[in-house]
Length: 97
Image 1 (cartoon, one colour):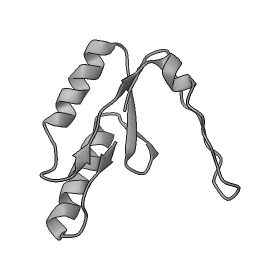
Image 2: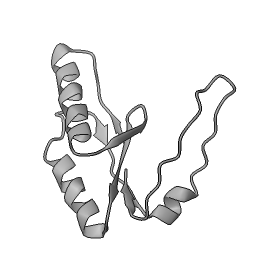
Image 3: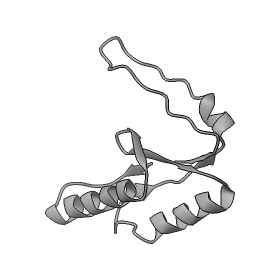
Image 4: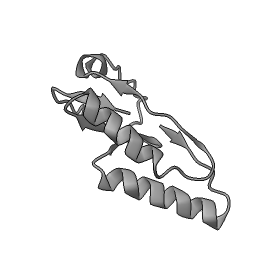
């Protein structure tokens, strides 16, 4: 999960580079500024947290959260009447946010 400033051209560039890194490393957008990645075990999840840590933008707030598939399945999706349909993606592995 991240909140990055996007006022200057340099901040916008850092945002684009960071988002591109997430996508190239198999992260999927759950909603704006919230990405997840399926990992097969705790060790793999920690490896990806280290990879994310290696490309941190110079400013902003980034948080990583490791949860199990069972915890992920308990997530409730609350939609307003004008929202698009949501698809729940699941796998029998750890989920890295």
